Image 1 (cartoon, helix red, strand yellow):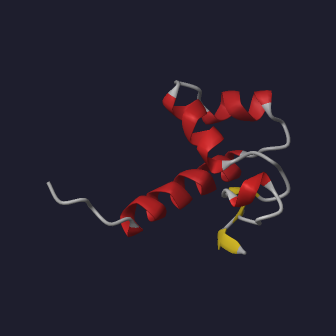
Image 2 (cartoon, rainbow, N blue to C red):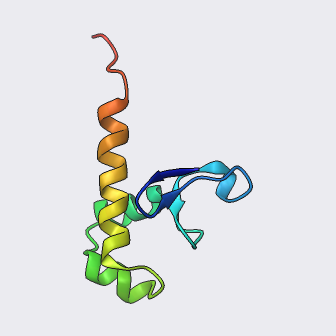
Length: 74
C-alpha cells in the first residue's frame, strides 16, 4: 500500500510500519535521527541508499499522519 510519495507499508516488511520504499528504513527511524540533531545531509551520508527527497517524504508523511490523528480531550 502506497501511503505517500516514496513511503510504503507492507505487513510482510518491518511489521507493516511505514518505511522508505525499497529499503527497511522506517519513517520513525528518520524522524528519530532528525530529532537527535542529524541533518538530512548527514543521514544520506550515513545511508547512501537514501536521498534527501526520501527524508522530506518521511517528514511529509509524519505531518499528514499527525494532522489526521484525533486529539485527546484534556
